[in-house]
Length: 268
Image (cartoon, rainbow, N blue to C red; front, side, top):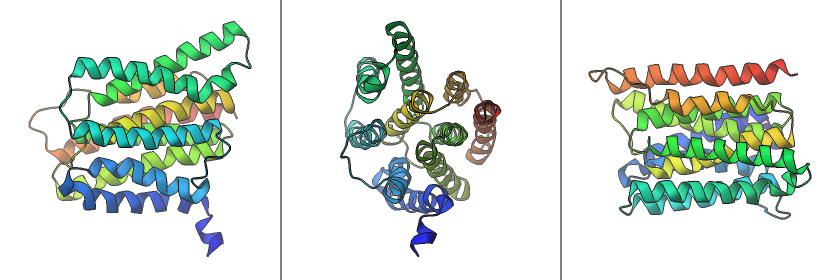
């Protein structure tokens, strides 16, 4: 039984997919189906890393940041908030989270190199967070962007010699695929909100840069991954059904995610 549970496919694909399916159906009536992301992610965390945060390494800080972001997302969805205020808050929060998670690694580099890495990573995380936040009311687009980001980030990390970060990223993409599947089958949109977009953008925004500085992900994978939430904004015919939107947007985002995977694979 332990050998079966410890299999990477169970930990990062099957288990988070089932957890996300259950969460999607269970919480939709409560307008909390956005919790699918954190449900799938936490399932993989429990199976591969547990929830022991001592010592507080960079990867464990990423996990903790995702959990906090999910709680904040639920709070934001239950209150009225101004977009401009949220924009400033997201930028400030991203800067602080990046420094908290990756500063111990960056400070080991030369000042110039650390500055370039720091500015680039903050820009990447902020870009992903802002674009994903604009999809908070568009479940088909947000789900497709999340699937592309999660799959692209996770598999790229696996090819970049980081099995743990790869599994964590992949679990997010798998959870988003379960979220899209429930909508594809039912033909009706499920609630999304910042409960979905905030933890997704923060986790994917941190996992890719962490793989770059801690493992072997090429830096040019990040601009490719950053294009995924932008592609999810592509205009579609207004008369298209939800199913048509999901299929087309999923194909587009997965194509961009595949480009990042190929770039990471080419460095092996």
